[in-house]
Length: 235
Ligand code: ADE
Image (cartoon, rainbow, N blue to C red):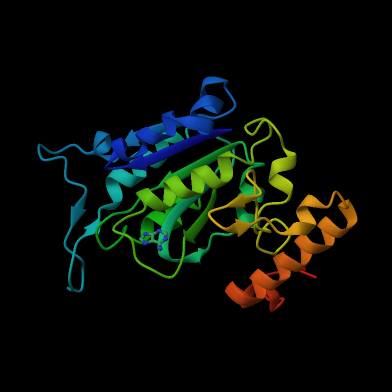
């Protein structure tokens, strides 16, 4: 999978050289290219923003550098998915990460300031499939941190990136429930015991206990996941 990121802060993405995704890049599974939006400006100050038409606070990112950037990074792409992180987008979910992990080409456009000139999204739609995506109901200073989170969520689902794919099956959100709690040695630590069922060797009982734990935690912490609104059938 190839991922292009367009940003005015390329150094934000240096951590992608580490750890699991860094190794996946080294092995050729992920081709992640980070581009500085200012490469596509033509004035001395490399300006990427301007005051909003109609007035109001803040600055809006100019369409011209974005148009050139999108043209350049998608020149050899066929119907890429072009993602713009935005608090005004649709919620990014594990289901979406799974879907995007099957794509050949992704482009992330990281907005800053009060956002990007709206015409850019329409233009991007003439190149590929545009998605405005939100990480959650809070406001970040720009799309960079959201893009990092999404690249990690998507990248680890690309076949081959995680050595043992079974570890993906039982994690939170994969079946619409939160993950069951994990314990390791020692069986007693600072006066706290590991639940005895886990030491019983009874695999049926362990599986039932874990399922109950999943349901209980989900009910307590994320009852919205049990409402059936989110598509995945949790029960
Ligand atoms: N940019 C600013 N806030 C954001 C959010 N909550 N999700 C995605 N991108 C953002």
